[in-house]
Image 1 (cartoon, rainbow, N blue to C red):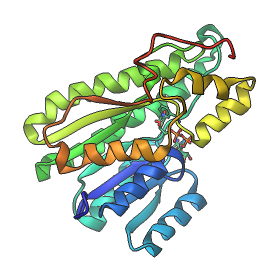
Image 2 (cartoon, rainbow, N blue to C red; image 1 turned 90 degrees about the horizontal axis):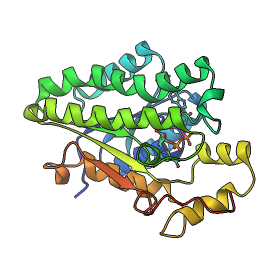
Image 3 (tube, rainbow, N blue to C red; image 1 turned 135 degrees about the vertical axis):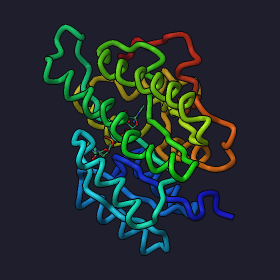
Length: 261
Ligand SMILES: NC(=O)c1ccc[n+]([C@@H]2O[C@H](COP(=O)([O-])OP(=O)(O)OC[C@H]3O[C@@H](n4cnc5c(N)ncnc54)[C@H](O)[C@@H]3O)[C@@H](O)[C@H]2O)c1
């Protein structure tokens, strides 16, 4: 029996990377997935591929830095399925690799808008429906960066730390209404986001990342997706307010930055 049969799921940043893997896994587990992203051609093709594979999927343009786009994504899921069971606030961008005093105000505000305000807005528009149906599971994408320090990523880490704090807060507030709120903190995962970081920063960064993970490799998007499916499923019915680290031991190790860097 599929684990998400009959559920309606909204996933932001679903055209590529971790969001893509989550959407695919949830669709294969029986959910009707609504894919929000700004990469429209990629998102439309992905939704069509899922439908061709027998899954239920719709792509909706959604720039998470725009309140009206988030409202529209959630309204589309409600209009089509009459319910909203799962919200995955996944979309984010990586602006960093510079000391905090070299970051511009514009960079800071852009990062906060895409990585943090988007989580507030996703929850703001999803919660009234989940409250009305007396059930729901929200999954917010945090990061190992919210747990440990790495030179150059203060703003990104600040946003992810705030995502975890908001997750706990909402778990307490909405637990009595049968709405569970959890976050996931991935370690370094093989996605386009990290390909971009490696291209920008260069050097031995990719090799250093491998050394920093006790498990001896970086992660796969599918490994984060499996955690998201679990947290969204009824099997996690007693799990709320947690941050699930899918990080190959990165945050369990003493802070270790190899000489390679
Ligand atoms: N890759 C990692 O190592 C890693 C580690 C920890 C946490 N994370 C988190 O996981 C999540 C996904 O990261 P990823 O590596 O898959 O990223 P990615 O850059 O590979 O993919 C992100 C997706 O989001 C979309 N996107 C970008 N800006 C958007 C916007 N304004 N509105 C809507 N969609 C937008 C992109 O088009 C893309 O499809 C993010 O929250 C990220 O912070 C990633």
